[in-house]
Amino acid sequence: MNNGNSHRSLLDTLRAQSEAVQGQGDAARRPVEEALKETDRRLWRAFKWLDEAIRHLEVIKPIVAHEFRLGEVLTIASPKFETGFLSFRRRPLGGEDVIDQIELFYRLVLDKPIVVKVPPAASAGVEAQLRGSQLVFEYRTEIDERRVARQSIFVVQPAVTAMIRLLPDYRRQTVEVLLRNIDRFEAVTLEFPSDAIEEPALEDLVRFILGEANTFLRRAPLAGVGAGRRPPEFKGPEVYRVEKTIRQR
Image (cartoon, rainbow, N blue to C red):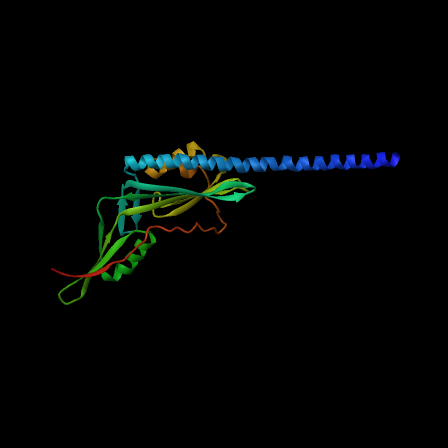
């Protein structure tokens, strides 16, 4: 009987120890799981908020108080908000289906094309700048009666495609926000704590889009400073070159 009681007592002891260790593991996992779920909830709320804001901007079509300068080539000043597109994708993580990224593309336009005339020797440099800024253009060469090129002419569609991408890091509980062509032909990435992705920050983001204030840029530091990080690849509108030759009249 004593051996039986000892055997049962050992099992009871092991059982109690096992349950205690398991309980500690569950207690440690709960904050991580809750943080993951809360970051996902914040991102989903951000997506719905931005989606509604963009739909309103498409109706209002406000003038945006930014100037997009392309060196000495051209300036797209005070364009109009034309259209926007918001998307998201999900992925499995820690037993949950969470938001992997949110992307917002929008387009700012002027009513009339911009005509840029340069000497033929400068055409390659101008073309490289236009392509680097994802601007759509047509190109032609004007020649004189002796068939000598007099000048290169670029007819540029003044349409700026801007992009905002939210990339959460659930392990670090941060969200990287990539901004491209928001107030200039440039990209910058900010790193926010995930709990900062709330309505006040989103309001500042829209104000920054409209050129009303740049408070959004002061809400978070640059991401990856000193780490040699590269912003994600950006695929803008297709740029094409149509070459024409015209004679001087």
